[in-house]
Image (cartoon, rainbow, N blue to C red; front, side, top):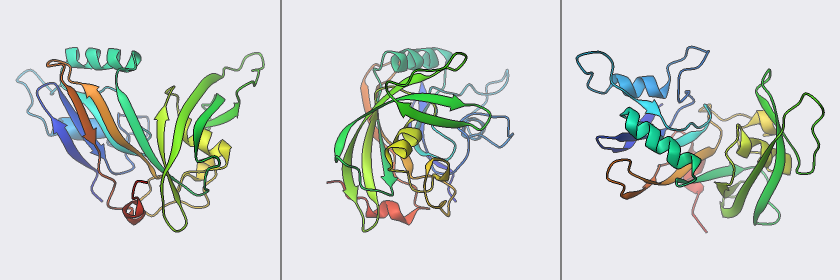
Length: 230
């Protein structure tokens, strides 16, 4: 299985299309991360390893576009742009159930159980008990395509929380294909869930020109070929 492709690179940053179930950054499992694998391919300065840091993350079992900074200054600029919501991200997901209505906004409060690494999407008026912490979560979705048995949604996050898309769609009764943790019927052969970070629009840190990039879908999942935008 191809693990990644590079879809953009310049002196300040690198954008990779993550195509395999590997972590974006090092984690306690000790498995090789995309960040380390990409860094190993960069020319190393005389004083040590090349600088490469992810400016954001996607889930281990998700695929799609991830921005990596090649300098500390670029990293700080990108992180500031993410905080200010100057970076546009669009996701395409394949779900098992047709959404009703075909477009709209999902609003929930999220409760993250770190022991099981599972997020519960609760009603937006849920009141947390003492000692528990919930976070507000909102996303917009629209039906963007369909196959014979599955449905493709375009997602825009209005908040960016851990497992947000997975938890909110699962709670709505529209689980993502392959995501058994959040209600899917079965896993996929390639180990990925069909949650793909498809489109990025952002400002290049030094030149400040706008870049718009599309991340190709993983070829290891044939069902992506059925996606034809409506």
